Image (cartoon, rainbow, N blue to C red; front, top):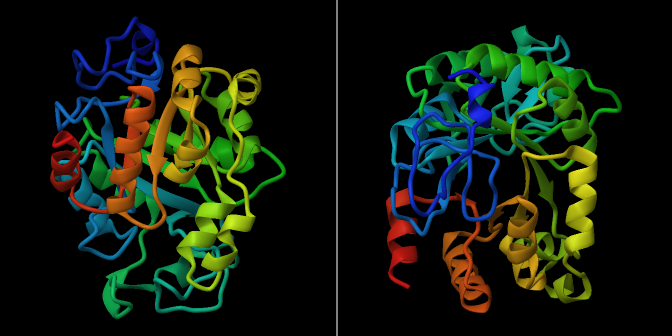
Length: 317
């Protein structure tokens, strides 16, 4: 489907789904990139697998492919560039937590060195699985054109080279438009908007309080930190800076602290994706609480476990 066609008037996510339609009108945004909802009745929330299938090494080729095969609506991945500008899939800037190679920065390696890196499983054991290159994963993902690839640019940049390169890579590999970029860096989003005027972009908003609660060493200090304040003026500023279609990707702790966020976002056509740094149980608890307060659900959720389990729990309340 051509991108000019994807700007046609959409449908309400809670009423109807159109497969392979990038821009649809959902409960919180009339311009969000989405695919056909695999879990057709999950309170209208699309579910993305956090770094792929949770039973396989995170951000691995197998985890991503299994995520695309499964009942998630999409897969969330992390992308970085090597020294020679090749894109790879890896969350951490410094290797070691999930890889055989340790204490080396991703951006300091070249492709030959990256080919020698092996991934660890979720228990920390080194496997024989090679660390993936983005182009190889995107080639395999072509078998699942209806699924969304949600890619976070992990590296900081003072210019537009990274964002422009990422847009080109995804445009070439997924011309049907079923992909989007996110970042904590507004600069990446501004640059991506210039390169891709029609594509959905997501701003990841970090919550220092939520980050502290995730770390047992910092948990006692968490209450001294304040969640980010996201009010209507803040959202309007994001619109001016990036323009629609755009969304925010937030920890549910941020959602709890900003009681009008879902209403304000809906009024402005901004999507809201949620995640929870502790886990799906806490994620579900906070979504139910937000629903009780506001009568609204977010646009999507990035989850750590099985889509069927998450949706099943959500549907019980």
